Length: 160
Image 1 (tube, rainbow, N blue to C red):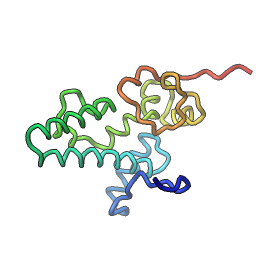
Image 2: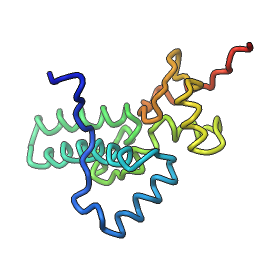
Image 3: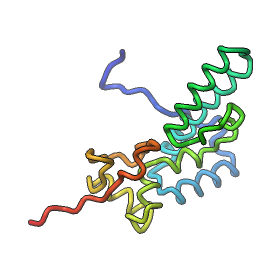
């Protein structure tokens, strides 16, 4: 199970971290989505990499086994809001890191107009001013599921 004091990394660092084009692209994404550091970007890339590897492994399967596993993958990604209902494994391979970053609570709060900037959205979330349904979520990297989008609301602070 592992030692609770030593959590595992949820991301992989890039193989060539000092390539100029990669640095420029990462810097643009960090600024556009209001990420705290590149680790948050790498975590989104790792999530995407996991699902793309699963989709890639489906191409060697045939028959009923492939249909069952592909349907399970598409249903999972549909509930996460990453793909449409009628998608297939090829569609999963076309996903980008931006698609995962668009599903973060921080981005959705900004896109809904509850915050003026992505950085403002991050501050509201960290300070406990945003609720998803009945739960207060204080993690900007929370991936919002498809059914939760319309239940995001801003909490008004209690009057002193």
